[in-house]
Image (cartoon, rainbow, N blue to C red; front, side, top):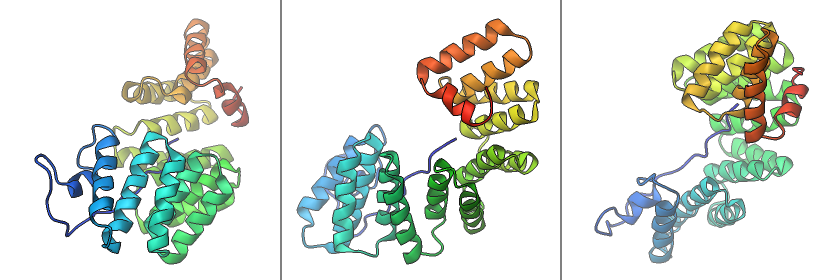
Length: 270
């Protein structure tokens, strides 16, 4: 699985500042070495553009995104609140605040924000995809699939939605359509570790151990510590009679995520 990406907006029409990048460049995330340059750039804009509502809205939103990237969700929500005080109909901040609430585990508040973002912009594919992910986590698979369908209809290149729909279909047993979704996610991005991981789960459910191991190998070549791929590969190896290899993978998965056994048990794999 892979969580939805926070969306950003661009600040424009502010004079260039600074010897290396303008504050606008930094606030727009030009320096991706860490969230700190974006926080610094947006903070500078918020200070110097105190009377420019349009710039302030986007600067608060973008700084909120940087705080979300840092895992400082309360600071992120505070910035999204400031953006929405200035523009209550700013769909991006509604969506992004929903993502921050999701990461905090406050699913109902996240859904409220995604609902509001969709109410403002009925074509907001990422908000549908984000809301679908919450429904998936809550075990409401019919609503999750409906929202993933809409996200993909609105944005057929949204690889995360294809992947998450694959995962959801695998959970509910729609295995052939799940494979088709994962195949499309991988076609869109051949280096998408989460899509190989989701297809590996689908192959586990189909009892195709060799295919599952091959996909988990691909996922782990991209992200060597992906716990679901370590555990899934271990599960498949045990099914093939490779006790040493299977147990080694499962032990490694538990080291990364202590809850991984429970997660797979809920998927019917134990």
